[in-house]
Image (cartoon, rainbow, N blue to C red; front, side, top):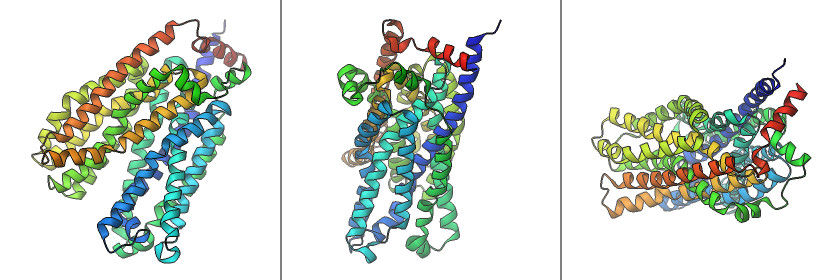
Length: 454
């Protein structure tokens, strides 16, 4: 006798692998687009778009432009979250990746201040705003297409894989920076060579679009359409139906996103200025940490399938809390092996929380508002995390760069995420137990449909 459930599960896994590949490529492009500007803004933005006799003022303007993409993300989350819950996950992701890739390439084509005058920085800021808005709708959809094509048992694994986009984007950007800086004179790199990474977004966009156009809409969204269960105003429904879950999701995301801002932005500046590390040493150490994530994220995703995504997140938060102060204490000895060890240890434990984040959110929100809920929660957490380097810098100045000051920030992020993840586990458990909520009992129907199609 044919085991239709097993057939459906195998079919779902095959679809999930193909869809997850499209998600990983998309989140890699998202990460690449973001970090290209981050890496190169100090090199070109101040001189090309914000010329001023006060170089510090020009650099500050460049970094403020970088920050705009953080603060407009919630706008993108609202716009694309609505579309994702109304017109579908697949169609919305095609729009977000297209807008992101084109806006990145256009930055590479922008004339500078010398050609356009004040219009040059205005156009640059406008393109950064467009990038940030598209980013606001990218992450939630990338998580959902993998989750909603998989079986419930494998959800944690497929929700973790799109998180590989962050280290992949970081590594590609780092390698590109090293290649360009070692093969081009500094003057050429500052005058026109900086445009190359931005223009490379176009071929990466072509690959992403090809993959996303080749996948199907998720079975979950198709079922919502068939049953006429789409909500008319999903964003409002998130706040009306699940406000507590939304706050919990924001808290659960803070460590995974915020630790990156702390480790890869503030700690680099702190390491150079206060601990007197060489910039190249810090650059190598952070790259090693990103390479390690290529292994740990899938492993932690597999762990999530066994113990649950929320548990993976709170374990990551608890262990990060335990190592926060010892890690920064050892960093004071300023040796390269300790620096590498700090980036590895400081990367492994927060990565637990990062890997489990998508599965945790998918478990606590209703299907008809999932795209909006995931996008808003992630965007708000990202906007808050954008302030972490500034807050840590101010705290360091107030404490005269006491060795423990970054540990306090990391500890606070860990504690918030720990409490939020424990709360999320309770919300997910109650949702599973509430058999009256039809959104939680669709899997058997979906499996039957898949088996019939097979």
